[in-house]
Length: 468
Ligand code: ADP
Ligand code: MG
Image 1 (tube, rainbow, N blue to C red):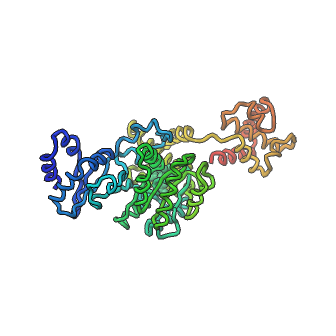
Image 2: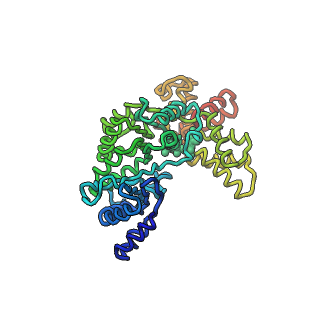
Image 3: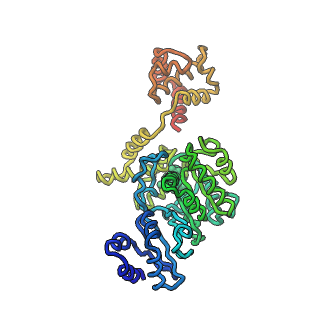
């Protein structure tokens, strides 16, 4: 059909114009009387609509009859291009896989009924690519204590989008705990259950970019209009909305419209609503309408199953000891856990060595050291004083009671060991002592730990608590 259209078009316009505007178009599919075309950019699409719509219409009507439809899918212009000048900047380090794909959510940019009198209303509509990653589904999202509520709420939403009280569903939790994965899984689930629903996954950063662009192009209303047509809207990492008043305002309108019409909204954030900063109160209160479900740090069992599952999917065998070693030592972030497995596999295959516990130890050491946040001296004092069941004031006091002195010395020892603070700075923070006192404390702890069994147990226990 498209080839015939092209022949007709070619006969009716200049060869240059044909080459520029029609050769790059890719026919995608034909369903009933709707021809799906992929065009390279939004600008391209606008140009076609402005200049060639009646030619297209005539060609299409000839081929498919008078109720022919044209559906555009728009490939994206490079999102990085031309973004530098914008006021709302996006840190490029925060991109994840969807941003690197070269497919944009097509945005309806014009209201052709008004701007272009040649178009018969209904001749075209805009198809929405859902931007979902099919491998991020519920099957690959393992259930554990840490994610049970969020995962089950997600499944309920996938079964009945817009039809549960979980609207919006807000998933929150720290980095690498599965927010993006779960958000996709819900979208993928909805697409399976309701293929006709329009689902759109978008990162908050892309949303902000699109919004900023719509301001520049003076198409803010069309931007809002496009989002209001969606049945299920998934916005990932909405903490990036903070401090962006324009984006928040536009999102507020979109949200209200969708919610009022029973459409499902799914949001993720690295903070719970009360801790979100620079987000307008009226938005925060909307977020609380539905359910906020937390993704917690995975427990040991879940970590083991996630590792085993990953190995299984990658077809790699690994000794149980090593699996347990990894699960024991990488606790706070599933992405890091996966990263450690990948580098373990890479190291062993590059060096043609088996995966041994020694290799695992080496990798985990690098991993944990490089990625771990430094504990603060305050946290150390808290952990030590909790452990000895005293308060921090007591720990810092001038008393010479033996057990208090020991607790104080332990706090100093761990502060020296686990932070980059100088002896003087440690001393001043732990009860205004001088650097010599701290040095003495460190030596005392080392001596006692090697001679006094009970004391050594304190050191070990505290070490464990502080490593968590
Ligand atoms: P976040 O968006 O919270 O930073 P991601 O969704 O990107 O985290 O998850 C990080 C990695 O951990 C991904 O590769 C994801 O597939 C994996 N992951 C997270 N949670 C689970 C889970 N419950 N089961 C299996 N893999 C998981
Ligand atoms: Mg994420």
